[in-house]
Length: 438
Image 1 (cartoon, rainbow, N blue to C red):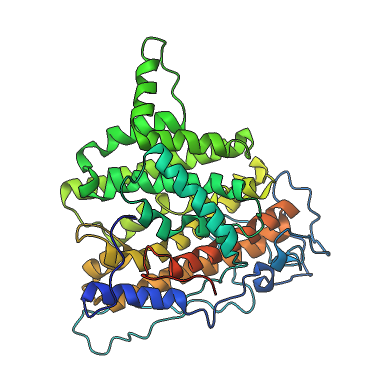
Image 2: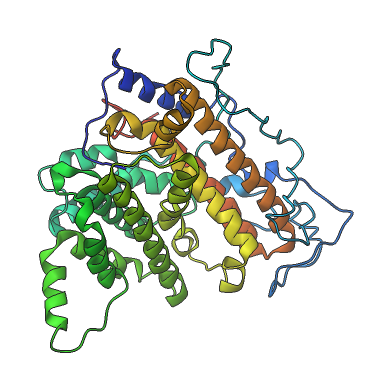
């Protein structure tokens, strides 16, 4: 989502009104679910579900496992539902007790239907586990100094500082106290954001849909280094040195490699490949002047989700979820649902700062269903909530049949989502004169 446009003023402007609506939804945490995932899961002592392949967890754990996250001290090991023996897409996991299902809604009525209910549902998303402004500021200060050194966002470093990506990473990884670990993730996030701005979204910064594919292919040769023949390898290195975004990715990954295993770094590279596919899909919409249908937009958002930063959760935490569990289809399904839901918070906030040719879920819903912006925002919240409730249901099942490490990972995914919500509700990207000290 574009970094450089200023946040809208709170005025009578229709676009600003849509932004205020999204901001109000994220900021209102009066009825937010607990930031402790364990409190949402349903204990089940009557069954012995099938374990994940390679898991050493007992069939029916009776004692909680500890977590390094303070508010998760009660553990997750006692909570789960039966894991479905059929494919999860065919047999959805029931929702845990205490989590009301999203009420089914009909396709939005046309905008002139005065009977349409515009009451906004509560956002089903936790708040942050911890807020340490001093730690966030430390990470952010180091991040802005690094951005200046590699040459990204020249002339806009004050705005980069105000958007406070260091705070995002501090909020999203509450188990991590080391600013250098947090900085490694923050560098990756800002490199990703810069590529999105300069290559995909911002025409004023040189974005051109006709060359997105070739730009991303060259960039990917840095993210997953291409072993060119000796005669041509120096030219690739010249490109890396001359292109600030390529330099940013190279340095960010070098920093990240201090804290990752080979498998964890490979995960990140794979997720970046998926992200580049999504950006090419978006470039196709721009190049052809086409507004995608909602289902296609959601496919793009599935590829262009928050998984690239979320995939670093265990690496930053100093542990590793085994490949057997990480790539289990059931774990991947739950994890990707969380990433899909998380990025829709960005859609709720970013619309007012985007140009008329950019895309977000409320905008494509309004175009497809001929409904008001308010109705489209409501539907976006409902879609977000559906994904989040399904994540809790899948986490409930997986936390019983998986390892203690998987239970910790799922808890920290939930914590990441809560931290992201707080950042979106408070960042200078969307709010002027933001003060996050309280």
